[in-house]
Image (cartoon, rainbow, N blue to C red; front, side, top):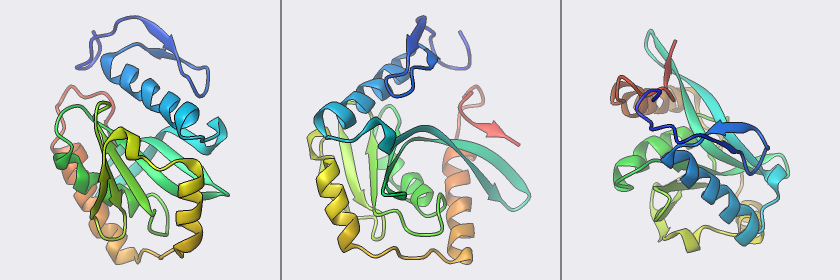
Length: 183
């Protein structure tokens, strides 16, 4: 056992072919990748798995993970954050990540536990829909992005959002969580 995950063996990453530890959480992530490609019409090249993000809060610094970044036409249009359990407790850090990852507001945020999902408007934080089936397909996301101008995130806002993300993902993390790296 490593960290707080039961290692069940090895598995191949659906998107990259990389060998990964086979955990219950990783099985859900792989199922999400398959859903996005096989049911929602995304190209594997649209999806960036396991993106590391450096966040700071004052003199503290850590690296957190964004499970999937969805890029269309070189624009990050959606992020997907996975976590077991309750979805509502994961909304705010996911929204914060959508305001820190790039210099503009990422339009859509998906928070999922692998069995359910909340699709959130990145700008307002409002839940737009619920359920894995309501994750927008590639064409819908493309249309949404074309209709929505890139809204810049001010440096002050980004700093505040980093503090929020740090508080939720780092300060509130289990000490044995090996997906968080305190720097």
